[in-house]
Image 1: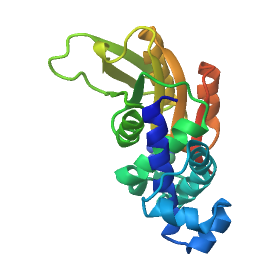
Image 2: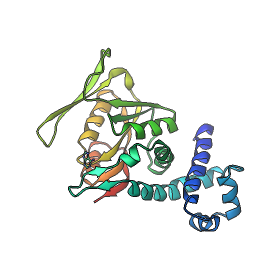
Image 3: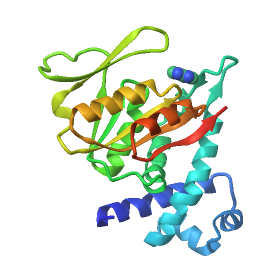
Length: 237
Ligand SMILES: Nc1ncnc2[nH]cnc12
């Protein structure tokens, strides 16, 4: 971790503690975290920053659990198993808390680019890209105007419909480490297309991440396609 990442981690730990503090007293927060109430008070009030190790523990362990809980509280699954996650993907401050937890808790290689597919993954990808200080790029189902060269990935879906995603060729360089992210992974079809784009670009996958895994199928499919870590913050059904 470089100095800027350490500072970002310390600030994110404060964000996580502030989130937890909203529903707890300092004594309860001390119990949850195992840290002294006096220190917590100074962190939450912004007078002192937690050291790097403490910050890492807060973000990786507490953050992960707390954010999975927050995410679960924000999503609704309908009778047919479809997920309404608008309360998560429309909430940029929430996603800004997710980014350091993802960056520190999933063994992903440090990416040069964060890649998603338009549209619902974009806010998450933007948070992650901002945390890592990298580009955020997204493939679309149509060719953007005035771009001359595209990387294309085409697939026939389970439904029989052919789907093509297009990414401007300049978005990913040879040898880039690319973190593939999306709000939701279910069949794994979108992730497969995005991983195809990474391969066509002669780049390397740094990992595959989704906020929500709807079942295990998509995660499994992604694992078959890449050796990079594949993870989700929460799994429904
Ligand atoms: N919102 C959603 N819920 C469940 N499966 C999906 N596949 C694509 N979008 C989905």
